[in-house]
Image (cartoon, rainbow, N blue to C red):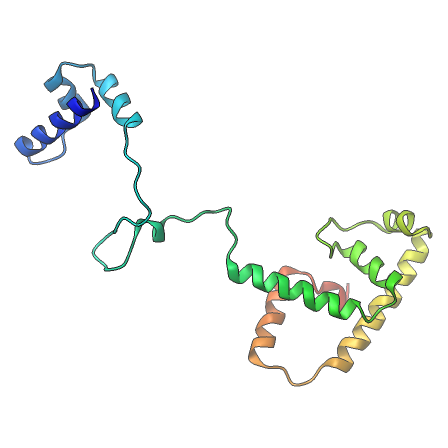
Length: 174
């Protein structure tokens, strides 16, 4: 049936000088138009992503189709670099302070926890968690200030990316 539809389409296309409608094909082969439409939809041939598109040389169908679920390799690299940088700075804190910062701001890829939730995890009150968090943030600010030196354009760009991601908000003040 599908080959019959394709033959009729080719013949009508030559005769009419344009692509025929499903109704015209249906009239030609004595079949209901709905059936022609259905058979055409289920028999659609897959298109290779390497199929050339347009007049420009080198453009392919794959260039136009984007997987929305796929992450950009540059974004992945920036994210890994950012996590690495944050961990380097946190390594300068006492282990308990670093854990509090990671838990409070969700730096291990988890959701940020409340003062009370962190307190339960490490066995102290929420007020003590707040005090330790403030102490850790002061240490981080001091550490970051002492580490600062003239920055390259790439470092400034990376800092802008970090700021856009909102990860370094605890370093510049709450």
